[in-house]
Length: 112
Image (cartoon, rainbow, N blue to C red; front, side, top):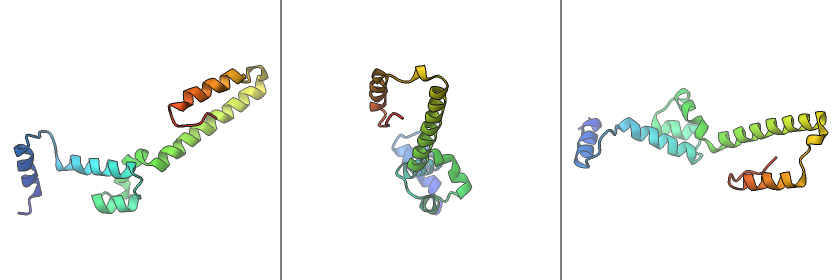
């Protein structure tokens, strides 16, 4: 009665599902919870992961993704400013700004 793995395998066999393990469901649940922005402390309690194990899912967190995009944008902006100070003739023209807006449209991000 306590061997959930045996029951799980039997149900998978009846459903004609192959190559699925209970651990795969745990991984999937953890992934979904991170994507939904659920706090790490709740995820670890629900899935049994230690905080060290949760680090592998960190890249899925909306906050982590936002911070990553902001860091990249900040770095690109600093490089652009440095380049424009060094070579003002490379300053973007009005048409360049429109092109950047068009490119950024599909990403949901705003051009720097």
